[in-house]
Image 1 (cartoon, rainbow, N blue to C red):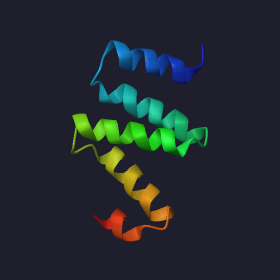
Image 2 (image 1 turned 180 degrees about the vertical axis):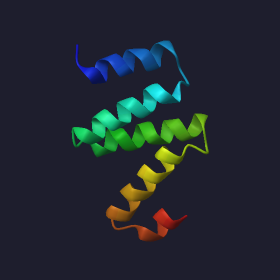
Image 3 (image 1 turned 90 degrees about the vertical axis):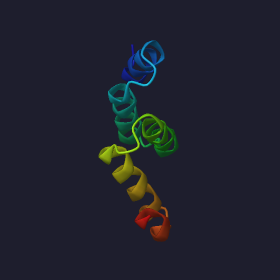
Length: 73
């Protein structure tokens, strides 16, 4: 079973568990599927608005996506 599927099943079983969402986002990032990873980081912030990893990854995505002003916010 692919790792992304394991994380997806876990997130469905335990909704709101940010560790599972972060793990899934990391896997998608390593697979160069940035849009899926960004969506998961945004979901993490819905549950935990102070999650440093999710904030940093979204900021980096905006910075390298040629939106540095958004990244600074």
